Structures are given as structure tokens and as C-alpha cells.
Image (cartoon, rainbow, N blue to C red; front, top):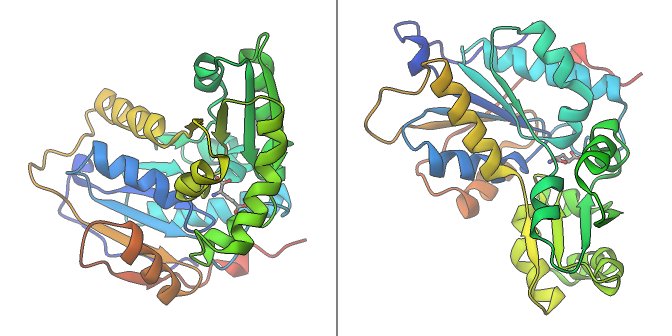
Length: 285
Ligand code: DGL
């Protein structure tokens, strides 16, 4: 059984919150874009920080956990779910859409198309987790959009963990980033796709280490626009005329998420609560 959130029983569906989830803090980069575009929507964020990183985990475990997280959010209820997580998009979205056919479910898509349009050197680099780069979804995007542009991929083990720890500028982080970026820069990449929702938090560091102008492209703003389009098409945009609140939940360390939010979330006060009990349904096999 999943613990439920506070039920807004007197609300109409357009007043329900939007649910957003990720394996950890990364989805907060997407939340920032959603909040900027839709200030009057209430939001609920669920971080599966007890299981982060999803990279390296089996597709079936990611599917199970994604389903449990959407169950948790849907119990609120929510009017849409944003899967702010690339591995969950690759492993779980078709399953989620089958289970919740009438719930708009908006997913991530590594920004291959805009990056191909943006490059002038004809070389695009992709930083992402191994699972995302190995997914059929990703290779499908490359064959659909790359054309004559070279798309060079670089899996980045360790970066998600650094961001989870709130480390956005240590020497150890710089060493990792340099190792991942250098081959892409040497090959002439002028455009880099940030193919993991944790990486926008490293944007400034990447630009500093690159030492030359670089397009860094992520998908958060496009996801926010797609969310607004879907809500509009279903007459589900919030009727509120004032900024709305955000609730944060985590399966991991409440204090760690609070610390992260203090640096990266404008609204105050923030309240983070613990999600209990979803582990039972999602044991790694
Ligand atoms: N933030 C995620 C992504 O978009 C997940 C990273 C992970 O847990 O491996 O890739």
C-alpha cells in the first residue's frame, strides 16, 4: 500500500496539482522550467532518492518504481504527471500510459533535434547516463534527426551522485567533467546535449571548464511547454490567478532534499516529507 498525500477533495480537476518525479534531485531542473512557465499551478514533486541512481538498474525495477511513484502522485490526485527522468522515460512510460490511460503523462526526450539544428561545427556531444544512451528511444532519435551531423555520446558515471550530494564545484567533480567533456571538445563539438535532468545543475561548471562558447541544450523548457499545451488542450490549466504552492516528497533523506532546495528553489517556505512503503513493491530481482 502506498501512503497518500493530502486529498484536496473539494477541488475541480483543473485545480489539482501537477505531479513530477525523478530518481532524485535532477527533476528539480525540470520543475524550475515548469514553475517559470506555469507560476499558478500547484506542483507535487516526488524524488526516489532512496533508489538513486536509476542508471545501472534493471528496466523492470525502474518500471516498478515508476509505477509506485505515479500511484503515490495519482492518489493526491494529480491532473498530469511529468516523468522528469530519462531512464524512467525509456523503461516505464509506455507501461505508465497503459495503466493511467486518461492521465496526461509527459516524458523527457534527449534534445537531439534542437541540438542538430543548433550546431555550426556539425558535431554534437551527448552527456547522459549509460542507460539513456543505450536505450532504443535514444538511438531512434539519433537515426531520425542526426542527418549528416556527427553525434558523439559520452556516458557519465558519477555525475548524478555528485549532484545528489550537492557537489556542483569540487575538484573531484571538475576531474570527472573534464574527463567526459574533453573528447567531445577535441572532436569539435560546439553543442552539448545535457541528456540527464541532473546535469543542468552543472551548466555553469561545464561552461567554465570548456573555456569556450558552447551551446548546452536540455529538455526542461520544452517539457514545460508540452505540459502547458496538453493541459490547455484538455481544459486543465489552473484557473488560479496567484502563484501556487509546491509540495516535495522523497523516499530518501529529507534533510538532503531540504538543503538542495534551499539553494535551487526560489519559493519559501519549502516543506519536504518522507514517502514510506514503496520499497515493498519494487525489490531488485
Ligand atoms: N535524472 C535522471 C535522468 O534524467 C536519472 C539519473 C539516474 O538516476 O541515473 O537521467
